[in-house]
Length: 192
Ligand SMILES: Cc1cc2nc3c(=O)[nH]c(=O)nc-3n(C[C@H](O)[C@H](O)[C@H](O)COP(=O)(O)O)c2cc1C
Image (cartoon, rainbow, N blue to C red; front, side, top):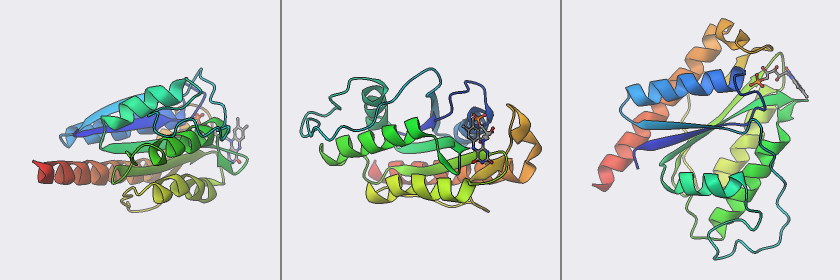
């Protein structure tokens, strides 16, 4: 399970969020931990409908990308998410997905417990810290471990690729990725 799942919540397959997460995945692999990148581009994620059917079922009753990710998460020690900022908040589909995964975990033995990771936010100009805070709610209610970096996990950019001009942003995410890999390696080594 020396593996980190990285999820981009952007509808742009090759946008700024994806670029940052690809770079984070590269850093994670350089630090001896496997990285798998997944994108929500081209996918729709409906909201939790509070049906309660996930209780003991191990999956969500709405059988879509959420269940695919539940499977991938069970085999990963780390979970990093990235979102573009939309009107000062994370993209709606991503929050739908996080809320549904959280319910499946809580109703099925808390499989998210002590997984390591955290959120990354990308925006043209503003709304990063609110978006990071909203995404952090998922980690902190699900018994997960969130390491820091040299700054908050945010970067600036509007059109695809512009994020590379934000050197400090890129370096902040790279240090965060290094810390996630370091913790995953440490925690997984302790188990054996
Ligand atoms: C619907 C919409 C709302 C946006 N709202 C904001 C915003 O509140 N603040 C901001 O700085 N940028 C905003 N942006 C710009 C995106 O956050 C920015 O282009 C980002 O790089 C997109 O990431 P991506 O390339 O990974 O999709 C918005 C873009 C869209 C499409």
